[in-house]
Every structure is written in C-alpha cells, then in structure tokens.
Amino acid sequence: MLSSSNKSTATPPYLPAVNATARGVGHFRWVICTLLLFGVTKNYMDRQVLGVLKTTLQHDLGWNEIDYSNLVSAFQAAYAVGIVLMGRLMDRLGSRLGYALAMIFWSLASMAHAGCNSLGSFAVARSALGFSEAGVFPASIKTVAEWFPRKERALATGIFNAGSNIGAILTPLIVPWITIHWGWRWAFIATGSLGFIWVGFWLLLYRRPEDHPLISRAELDYIGSDSQPPAFKVKWASLIPYRQTWAFALGKFTVDPIWWFLLFWIPDFLQRNHGLRLMQLGLPIMVIYVLADVGSVAGGWLSSWLIHRGRSVNFARKFTLLICSVCVVPIVFAYRMESLWGAVLLIGLATGAHQGFSANLLTLASDLFPAQAVGSVVGIGGMAGAIGGMLMAKIVGYVLQWTGSYMIPFFMAGSAYLLALAIIQILAPRLEPVPISS
Image 1 (tube, rainbow, N blue to C red):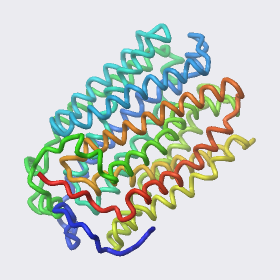
Image 2 (cartoon, one colour):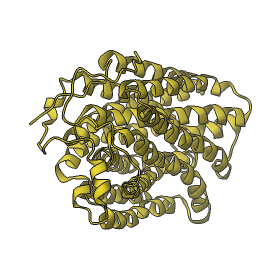
Image 3 (tube, helix red, strand yellow):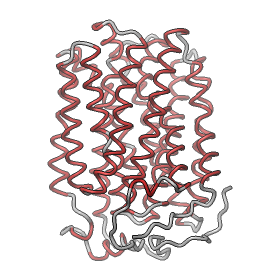
C-alpha cells in the first residue's frame, strides 16, 4: 500500500524535475500563499457565525434542532452545486478574477443575514453564501498548482488551509462580543464586510507567475521545474471516467461531512454537555482550532519533507493520511468525557488530524491532474463532500432531536478517515497522474 518506490508506470509531462532546489530562488510565492491563507480565514469566519450564534438564534427565533440542521443542509446543497460551477469558473476566468468575484458575492451574502427574520429568509441567505463561498478551494488549489512546484504543494496547501482554523478561532472571540454590545445582526455585517479589504489586496498583488513583475527569474524557473504541458481546455465530462477522480471525490464525500459537523455543532456540544455560555466559548474553541492549525501545517510539511527525502509521492501522501486517520479515532470517546478540557483535547486532536488529512487530500488533485483540470476536479470533489455534509447534517439534527446525545456523530467521525484512506488506496493504489493531453 505505502510503497516507497519512486518509479511510475505513467510519466505525463507535468511530473516534477526532482533535482530542482529552492535555495536562493526568492520567496514571492509565499506572499501569494499568505493571500490564500487570509482568504480561507475570511471564508470560515462567514461560515461559522451561524454556529456560534446557534443557541442565541434558537432562543430569539424559536428554531429546534431539525430547523437548524435544515439551514446547514441549505448551505451545503448550494455549496454542492456551487463548487462544481465555481471549479469550471476558475478554470475559465483564472484565479485572479474568479476568486475576486467569488469573494465579493459571498461577502454580500454573509452581510445579507443581518436582514433575515425567519427560517425561510435565513435559508435563502445561507444558500447564497454556500453557492458563492464554494469558489474558495477551487481557486486556492488552482493557485497553488500554478505557483508551487509539486514538492511544495502539500506544505502550501497546509498553510492556506490553516486559515479555516484561524477563522474558526477568531469567530467565537469576535462574534459574542459584537452580539452582546451591538446585537447579532451586526456580527454578520462586521465579518462579511472584511471581504472587500481582501479583494483590494488580491487584485493588487496577484498575477500568474509568468506575468508577475515582482517575481525573480530564478523563482519563476523553480516554480516551472515541474514542466507543464501547453495550455489546453479540459472538458468536465472527460474527467468522470478516471479512477483518480473518483478516489478524490469519494475521499471528500467521506471526510468533509466530519469537518462540517465539527464546525457547525461543536459550539453547541460545549454549551449542551459542559454548560458553557456564549462568552465562555472563545478559549475552548481557540484551543481546538490552534491544534487544528498545527495539524494542517504539520500534515502538509510531513508529506513534503518525505518527498524531499526521496520518498515517492504515493508513499509520502498515504503515509501521512494513515497517521492522520489513526489520530482521529479517539474522538469517539469525546461525548463521554466529563472534563471540559479532556473533551476539548480529544476534539482538538481530531481537528488537527482532519486538517493534516485534508491538506494532503486536496493536494492529490494537483498530484493527479494537470493545472488546467485542477479547478474542475476540486469542484467535483467539493460537490461530493457537500452532499455528504448534507446527509451528516440531517443525521445529526435528527439524532440530537430524538436522543440528545452526540454518541453516534462522534462514532461516525472516528471511523470516517480510515474508510476514506481505504477507498483512495483501492481506486488509486499508485497515485499515477492521469494521461490527459490536448
């Protein structure tokens, strides 16, 4: 399963030049990675406002657990549709314009929540947010494929993906304070409006590497050490027959719902099981997502380090996925922990492992497909993950409504990652890049 052989039976033109070195070539690509980090941070702040305000909105607007799960499902249904279309949009418009448009629209959708007064109006706003937010990962993975050689992509992905944890840390620190002083409507306005600042920096600083005036020739050559095929368009339907597409998509279908569950229900779990009030959520959630940040960067670093040490991409990615999968398993005991900090540490270990797993899973799209197809492949996988998230939302909503216990959701979380790795191994045992050409 985890063969360390560097040989491959397929050698498409976008395999890396293994002797390229990063020494003395410049670092502007990491500026681009930092922009991606802030973009994902903003994305997850907008997503998590509803989760932080769940108890408040249930009290003010009279929602039950199934009503809340319906809002989560509305977001994810729109996300499932949006990510496929956004993936194609990024491949057609390019990352610069496509990402800017997505950020503008989802920021407006986030702010629109402030005008909602009913479950129906919230469902419309959540759907608009889910559809437009779906552009974040196709744009980010496509940008990484354009700006980083293959050996650095998992690390770059781990760094920008850490923005999901930073957003999840900042939201429970900022939103309760805004809610108490100004009301919950201003929480949506304040977080949503930050997107327009990001768009200004993005349009100012982002270009493709070959068109950028601030990149050195040496860094451009280093980025191009993974030789790319001539530009050509890839039809969406042409990706469906490949086993590699299904390996990525089914992996996302299996593990993404766990992240959605953690993002949208952990604040409620801490309030329900450990009696925390709104203003007390900040520190426990910060600890959980600081651990998630560590896992995101460490997971990306580990597989990149293994490749630098001469291991094959297949070994490096799957070895890291295996370690992360095992680290999630203890979360099955979180619902039984009487100690708040015991539960927090188990959940934090799982979130860190998820992010390490996710950084490598996302990187598989650029490992297996040329840059021209990455946005579309990420879109297909994101749609599968969002569909899985819809199913998870309904399961959690009904389980909580009927039993009041988190036992079943945590059991599902603990077993999902080993299942996903098994699926990837069956469908892509050697991680052979697909032979797409014009």
